[in-house]
Length: 316
Ligand code: ADP
Ligand code: MG
Image (cartoon, rainbow, N blue to C red):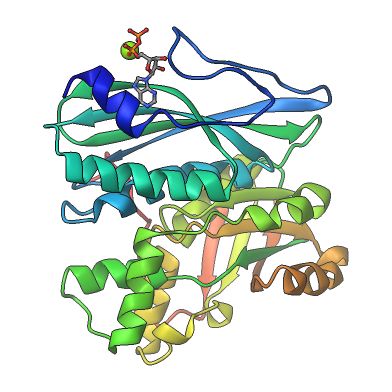
């Protein structure tokens, strides 16, 4: 199969997106940004053996590579619309390409995203997706906007993906149903796009949790120049993690990566709005801390025995 056969067979999808002026197949795609919106742009690369275990099913690789990018859009208060795919493949493995393409298309369709271009090369397995989205003009859901007096909230449950990875690496065992659930959370993360409307209206600052809660909290703390106090006794856990010893659950939740939940700050007078909005979208939301002073720090209270700083690719 040639490069062009691969593109045609696996990555040339029909689209009825009226804002897509020119899709893939030319030297560049052309998209139309509607009046009143700003273009949000992000890119995330997934390397085999680094971002996903070598044995990850192909459809999960496709699904997750895009999910993490959609999550970045959500954390910015933007709605993902288009993406490009730069794919580096060690060989042409049609079964793998079919699985990858299916996983990618499943999540693209669920979020009504068009694949508008890309690049296909030979090399170590690596997937780089650039995503383009739209945010209403003036949306400023930044990491730098947390204010003293805000409360700190998180969507969903924490630690499930880290437990999934621990299961895969045989550092953990769980009953079968719980193990299956954690593996699904690791391989098929959910970008919390349903929270975006609330966040752009009410939240001050937001970040998505790719590298672990404490590590992401540090980004908010540094960029907003504030102290984040986290109450480890309030962390939200799924039913799957409840049988585990508290210290282990806390470690997964505080330091484990790959949850793709949204961590955000909210002025305290808006706490009362959380319940109505989030129960309507069937997404748990939990108050886990507050912003105490204008000095960059993260303090974790009530953790059994915790020390870590999250995942950093260049720190060993
Ligand atoms: P160029 O030589 O101009 O870089 P390419 O030969 O790399 O173009 O790609 C031809 C067309 O196919 C382009 O429109 C490009 O966007 C698209 N394309 C290449 N690889 C992919 C891919 N993996 N997924 C989607 N579109 C792709
Ligand atoms: Mg090219």
